[in-house]
Length: 325
Image 1 (cartoon, rainbow, N blue to C red):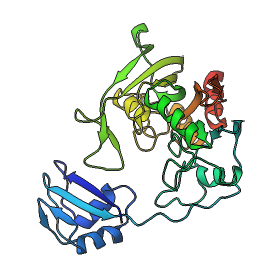
Image 2 (image 1 turned 30 degrees about the vertical axis):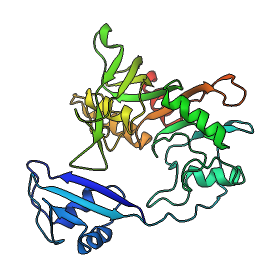
Image 3 (image 1 turned 120 degrees about the vertical axis):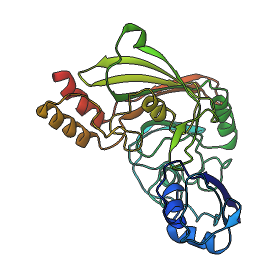
Image 4 (image 1 turned 180 degrees about the vertical axis):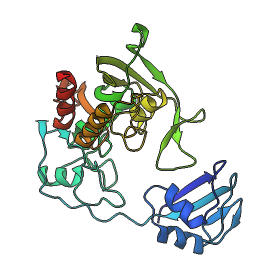
């Protein structure tokens, strides 16, 4: 049975709380019962020593936890609608809706893009990944919408993955973000900041000097009173990269619940405007981020291919109101 090895340093200023509660809140995809089982089995060490579930953690302590991972269940085909932009014998391009998880994982073993793909392709997908991710060459966050390329065979998968690795895949995202970019020199640029898993909250990514190098290009397409529409390109492909980078420079993705996008960052005090912002946040219900364009060299025909998708309705609706004003 495989296992996960995790090390967490209790951050400065952290209020003392039970060890099992702290770990449940700071480890992705884990339940309190699973944490307690690991503690009971002696798989959790605090500063190198076993501790009880009720032990009160303190700032600066280093917690090491080993979590056994049970084998994933069989992933079954499901008749779920897919918006297929292109398909041939080697691959397909899917326009993934916001709210759909890319592949099965803890807590999401049904209703995913993979379940839908298995049904649509009659189980004919590449097998280079484990059995929970057949055909998946790259992924989008659950609440990020947009274009994904899926491989039907192992050779196509390997060739597409190589293009991602060499960073020659053409990917363009559009996003609504908080604030205006003042001054001509800021209408386009590159955000460069290394990214790593947060030590205080394992479910988040943070800017970290010890993290992996990451760079995001941005161009301002339109500006409104307190929001901007950006075009973004990835020079690297780190988890949550665009969302964390934009939060880092003070322009969180509008509606992003994890990285500051649902707090009203507009500095005005006008009651009518604040009500308008709340209305927009209710319209969007997620991070306003869409993978709009993808381009690559076809793994079999070697033809250069490029696909573009419309912004989803929730982003278009907010833009209509902003442009009308």
